[in-house]
Length: 325
Ligand code: A3P
Picture 1 (cartoon, rainbow, N blue to C red):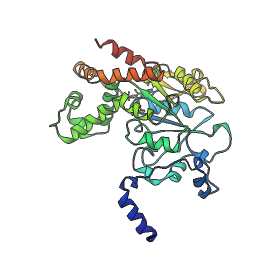
Picture 2: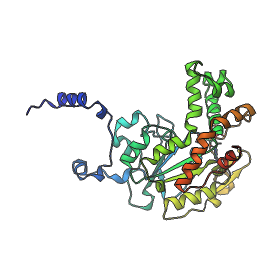
Picture 3: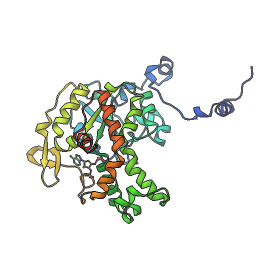
Picture 4: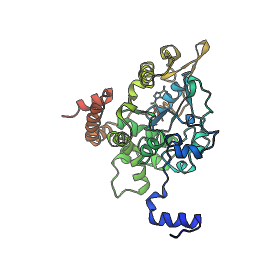
């Protein structure tokens, strides 16, 4: 039997098994061998029990704010790099390891507020996030918010315009969504960021191959926008929190903002910033019709999937299905 010094041995190993170069972090407390070699000061209670996975532009920030108002729930510390979102499971941060991830959550205090959650809105359509999340957080609950994928695409386009993306400035929304394979690469990239996350059934299916349907709650983003307190009731039941908070009393519709906001003492409201709930013209009819056609099959797939999961169809999906003859 021959062996090599550790570094060479590792190099040799990864030559033979290149697919294992990508690590997969498991909960150290799920395996006694891992737990035994882990520092005594560390605890597996410092991981989130709830992930809000997105997709982007569906109201994830509003939900994050509303959940943060609950006394039993504690959100992550904001990330300096990615504007509040940790984005651990989807990208390169994953390679920074679980200690890096844990630092985003407070040390557990052994009270009911140790229920940690984080939202990273691009987990939803990430190829790798479901597998990675399920390896580390197999018992976690997952929340996804779905709005009409056509509106989501348009909201993303407006978001990019507001961020001075030259491609979104140069091309109309209709140009972006109808661009062909011969279009400039950057235009195709923007098109893909507008359209691909909206293939809801495909992405949800990926999460379902790693999590039991009972762990996943699919929310109607339109209802979150118009009746957030009822949605918060639903979420509290799903999470089985110790204290039930009456959101009907602590949220108020702000006519100036045009959205529901946090009600502060003295009757003032605290709303999300300018970048959430932007004002822009309605989508043109041609784009609406084009996207209705594009998302026809994916929306049918979504309705079948939700039916199998035993979850109600969002109102916008019922409306879209009415247009399908
Ligand atoms: P628009 O700015 O296009 O209207 P996310 O936080 O996932 O990026 O989603 C942003 C979207 O959340 C906004 O898109 C807005 O429509 C929606 N939204 C839902 N409830 C909201 C609220 N209470 N305040 C602000 N935006 C809200």
